[in-house]
Amino acid sequence: MRKNIVAGNWKMNKNLQEGIAFVEELQVALSNVDKINCDVVVGTPFIHLANVSAAINTGLIGVAAQNCADKESGAYTGEVSAAMVASTGAKYVILGHSERRQYYGETDAKLKEKTLLALANGLTPIFCIGEVLEEREAGKQNEVVKAQIENALFNLSAEEFSKIVLAYEPVWAIGTGKTATPEQAQEMHAYIRKTLAEKYGKEVADNTSILYGGSANAANAKELFSNPDVDGGLIGGASLKVETFLPIVQAF
Ligand code: PGA
Image (cartoon, rainbow, N blue to C red; front, side, top):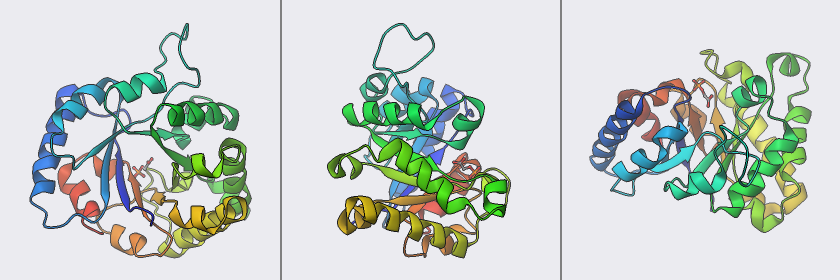
């Protein structure tokens, strides 16, 4: 069966010391929780990965990079490869976040390469998809999301695809305080699962974790996660403090 996952995305926040202090605090807080019913992941800037991984000694937290290069290695100044990410102890990589698509020109074609390299290096991609406001207003959200999945991921075999985690993040809900309603989230997640079933069969579709992202917080997480096709969250703003992140973990 698919896993429930609550993943934090720190974006470009926290210096190294703050990052380490956060995971140390989160670790203690998680050890005091009776039963944790989801995998917990923190998505840190590259520079934090090795130290944050080293600071986690309980196995209670997985570490994610927020990006990786679309090339294997070589003369690509400023880039960080999937192999480098894996060598830090990180197990996940967030790919295709809308901020990377919007501000750093990430295309489906680049994301296809990044995904292949992440998989080849044993990383679990948390692959983000989602429509912008104008697309939703035009009723085009399903076709936009389907095209993002098709263009970047449908070259994968069923076995490869079974290692992917998806995160549906309507761009109009990210950092805006405007969450998708539980009905909107469920409707899209069910559509995504149907799209996966058509391509890879019901078993792969049923086993794929599909997270929701976009202004998820302690107040709305329970209702969002109670939907049958919502398997957790990718959390930005509310993942920056243990007091706001832990209740989201506990929403499962
Ligand atoms: P938000 O960000 O929770 O601050 O809306 C989510 C994300 O961008 O992953």
